[in-house]
Image (tube, rainbow, N blue to C red; front, side, top):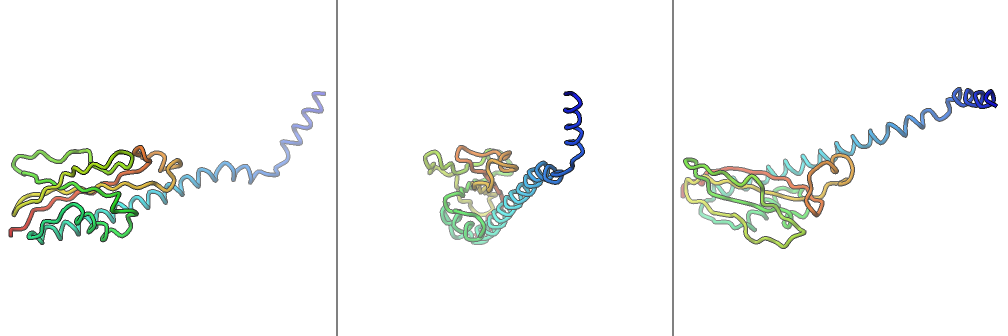
Length: 178
């Protein structure tokens, strides 16, 4: 009886049929995880660089056109137009613009004021227009859903209640004299 079992086990051990399938089944999930996380990171980086570029171009326009006081919606729409790669930009982007005194520095709140689609819309936006030669800080915060929110990099990123990731971009500028 024992001899029969050991012979069957030896024959089973001697067969190498299906080795490639087992190796493939073990390696492919890790390979796909790394591949999809790389794609996710690339798209996050692309969105962030487009947001930074659009904010910089808009800040340049604000700085040089000191006669026009643009409101939150106008600046947001200009950033959305220049960014090009941000989905649903008008409803996922929120701006903060504050005066900063370089001699009595208080800084800006470290937690960005982002849009939360779960809660009621907060119309109170910190948005101040500067005068000539004033230091201004502007911060843009946008939210988006990751491609794979439950797998790889998308799972490990911090998300809000709606499953959205926030990206922020900030810039400082001095209003040109009028």
